Amino acid sequence: MRLLKLEIKRILKTRLTLILLGLCLLFSFLLAWIPITFSYNVYQDANGTEVVLKGLESIAYEKELQADIAGAVTPEKVRQALENYQACLTKYGVESSYDLPEGVYGQDILPYAPLLHGIREAYANPKTGIAAAIMDIHPEAVDDYYRVCEGRVVSLMRQEQKDHPAAQQRAFDLYSKVGKPYLFFPGYSTNAMDYQVMLAFLVILFCTVIAAPVFTSDYQTGADDIFRCTKYGKGKFAVIKIFSAFLISGITYFLCISIYILVSNSLWGWECTQTSMQMLYSIINLPNMNIGQLQCFIAVAGLLSILAVISFTVFLSSKIKNMVVCLSTALLFCLLPVILYAVLPEHIGIWLYSVLPASATGLQTSILYAAADFAFWNIGKIAIWLPHVMLGACVVEIPLFAGLAVYSYSTHRIK
Image 1 (tube, one colour):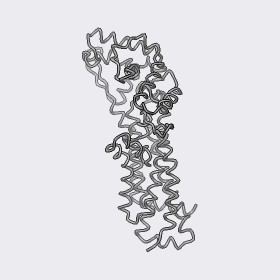
Image 2 (tube, rainbow, N blue to C red):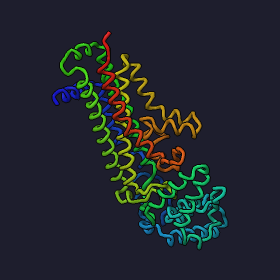
Image 3 (tube, rainbow, N blue to C red):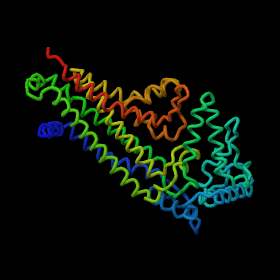
Image 4 (cartoon, helix red, strand yellow):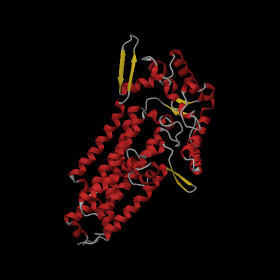
């Protein structure tokens, strides 16, 4: 325990470490606030004066405007919203809300607009997947709204996984567990979830910089030659170094994500965490989660990802003697999921980036987008949902690379 305290103290005394940890905390507050600034609404008051609302004022306005639709998203509510929408477009003789006169959308449609989220997707052509024109959807058909959603899951998976019946069945099984009717509470934006992933990505980058010199710095300075002559200078010392990197990175991530979620939910309103994921992303998303549960899911996945990244980083540190090379290689692997996603065909890239340590927190490859998608690993008759692949890979990589780092350091030869 004394050696562990000394090692943690040694790492924390470094000026660069303190700067990076301070930036982590700063970004926790900053990134929680930025999505609030994106909220924007314009309306005309009783005197005909245009009023522009931004940030918290805009969110409060939307909550007040949509207060009547908060709660369960029943087929009756959706049908009424569809009827009102179609009547509004018919009144002005247009086919789309984009063609309405200025101010009409905000006054006549915005109060119930969230209830129409995904209705075109739900009633898409089952053969072609083309979304239905909202004016062509008959209000009576909405009485079977959730049965139609189940049918849409089936038709979508037949299109995307036509050669993999196991994936089709797995997707339907996941969706059948989703609580219905959905819940909706106005005010929240998916931008807040995106910025949670961005924060996790930044924390991983910063902690990688902190962990990279764990072994390499001793190699370069020659201090390792002295440590190896001590009683616990090999295996036990390696375990202490790795565990100290885990503790510093894990606690930093936990504090930052906790601050982010607390600040973000306080700004948006805690009632928004009860909103079903399907009301903000795809209407047929597979996870049975509300926004609060999704935040926790992403947070846990991020913690596993950062521990896997740090485990891999200390393994590199135990093998590479040059600090610049070690740090560059570790940072490259942090960015590699995004690179593979961009340059490789999807059917190839998904097999590679999903098992990398940083994949769950990659900006385009994050587990958030995987949870909102319908991608599967298909191995013969076995279908594994992509978020489960990412989590499983992290769970395996944490002890694997940590164990390899201990072995590598213990068997390292002094030249």
